[in-house]
Length: 244
Image (cartoon, rainbow, N blue to C red; front, side, top):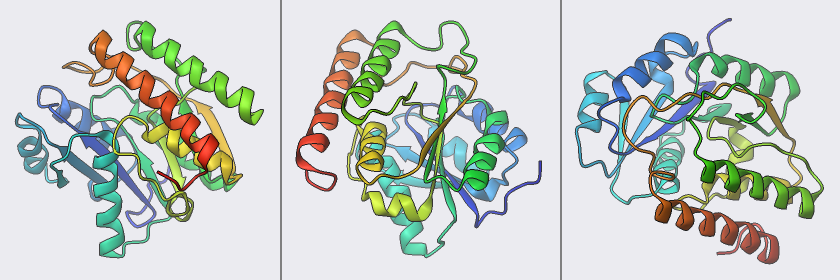
């Protein structure tokens, strides 16, 4: 497939304490995503290890986010894009642990360009999932969120997966604000409330290359994340798209 020019697609990759696997993950993205190195923005999310050092040595743009939280890291990158006036056509979100298959990136880019959708989500549920890559708690929480969307919006989705791409103009309209684990569900619900065109396509999902998931690594963390997702969903549903 033809490679995307840097101004067309920018890929945001939040990373926290991923020193043992991030070089392998990023090399895979660079080699197999079809995007140039200059398309990637890695956000160091308060890492306590050598994650940012490794990324900088690889020659990739690295931003620092001192406040822990997936959403915080994404907001740092989006503020940097806004302040530098890059105005890309699309923003892609990808994980730093190697679980996303780089071969799916050109596919997800092609779908958003051909359909002119606002948001395209890579669904692990209808794709190929490596055994053990998703914990039972993740599977349950994901199914519950999709069930709530079906009940309240009459729209069927199968996943809240991390690999996703949006038109930059549509992302700006969403006025994203969640600092932590509610980021993806906030994006989804706000897009539904604004009646945006949302699609999903099957993608592959692998075991992380190394380390422990920040979300599903422990039972207590999984419960906290589940509560946050439910809180975010019903807050947006009851109080609207742009209220804290």
